[in-house]
Image (tube, helix red, strand yellow):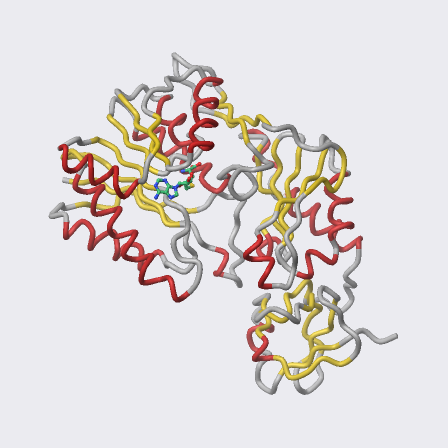
Amino acid sequence: MSEPTLTLKPNREKSVLRRHPWIFSGAAARVDGEAAPGDTVIVRSASGDFLARAAYSPHSQIVARIWSWDESEPIDADFLRRRIARSIGARAALSETTNAVRWVNAESDGLPGLIVDRYADIVVCLFLTAGAERWKNEIAEALGSQKGIVGVYERCDADVRSKEGLKSVEGVLRGMRPPDLVEVWERAPSTPSHPQKWRYAVDVLRGHKTGFYLDQRENRKVAFEFARRQSILNVFSYTAALTINGWWNNPTEIISLDSSAPSLALAKHNLTINNLPINGLTEGNAFQLLRKYRDEGQTFDLVILDPPKFAHSESQINKATRAYKDLNWLAFRILNPGGHLITFSCSGLISEDLFQKIVFSAALDAKRNAQIIQRLSQASDHPVLLSFPEAAYLKGFVCRVE
Ligand code: SAH
C-alpha cells in the first residue's frame, strides 16, 4: 500500500528545502490517500519530488510537521527511539549540574509537538500536536525504558492541543504516579555559609507547564551573582527558584511577589528545605504592588521581572507591549541609583529587538539612564534549531541604572 502523500502548490517547496519543519495549510495543494490526524504523509513538490515525511494535522493551520527529510527513513517506533536517545544524549553533560532537565524540546530536537521534562526519576511529557499524539504509546515506551526512570506522566496544554483538534488529557503513561512533590537538585556556586546544591520541590501534577521553569536555569546563576548585599524585589516569583538563588549570596532582604497563593505556599516549602528565610513572601498583583512601592517611596537595589507570557497571538502584541512597558517603567521608578534590573519576556511573538525597545522606552519615561550589561536567553536544554528560529522565546536583559 502506498503511503499517503501531501503535494505542495507550485513554488511552495522552498521552506521545506531550507529545513523549516512546518507546512502551512496555504502551501498544500492536496492530499492523496487515506490520512487520519497524526498519520505520516510523504511531502512532495508540485512536480512530484520527495521532500520529507511529516505528521498530518488536518485541523491545524500548520497542516503538517516534518519528522524527517531522509527518504530512506521510515517513521516508526524505532525512529522515535533513536530521536529520543539522541536528544537525551545531547544533554549528558547537564547531569553534573542538575537532575531536572528538558530531555526533548520539540521541533528543535527533531520531534515536533513533543516536550519532555525529566525531574529526578519522573518524566513529564506534553503532546502538543496530532503527530506527537499518534505516537504517544511508542514515545512513552521509549521514555519509560530510560535508566533511572520510574514513572512517565502526561500533562496537557489545553489551548495548544485544541488548535490541533486534540482533547484535554492528563495521567500516568508508564510506571508510578508522581508523588505530590518531586524533589530535584541543581548545583550551586559553593559559598562558605551554604552547601553545594539547591533543592527544589516541583509540583509536576498541578504546577505551571510541567511544574518548573527549567528554561531559567542559567539565569538563576545571574540572579545569584547580582544578589550580594542588595535589597531585592523578585516579581513573579512562582515557587521561589530565583529567590533561593538570590538568598544564597547573602543579600539584605528579598521580597518575592506573586499573585498565586499555591505558588507562594510551595515557595515557602522550597525556602525551608534550603534553610533560607521565608520572610518577604508577598501575595498580590504585581501591577498594583509595584505602584504601591513607588507611591510609598520604597526602593530596591535589584528588581527581577519574570512575568507570564503576555502575547499568545499576533492580536495581543500591542496589549502585551503596554503591559511590559508598564512593569519595566515601574521597576525603573523604584530602583536605587547604581541598581540593577533583570527583566524577561517569554512571549515568542515579542522579539528581542522589540523587547529592547520596550525596556528603553520604559527607562526614558521613568527618566532613568540605563545600560544593558548582559543579555539572557533560554537554558541550553531548550535549544533553537537554526532552521527554526520560532523556537527562541525567552529573552532578558540585565540593566544597570545610573
Ligand atoms: N520567575 C519564576 C517563574 C515565573 S512564572 C521562576 O523562575 O520560577 C509567572 C508567575 O507570575 C506565576 O507564578 C504567576 O502566578 C505569576 N503572576 C501572573 N500574573 C501575576 C500578577 N498580575 N501579579 C503577580 N503575579 C502574577
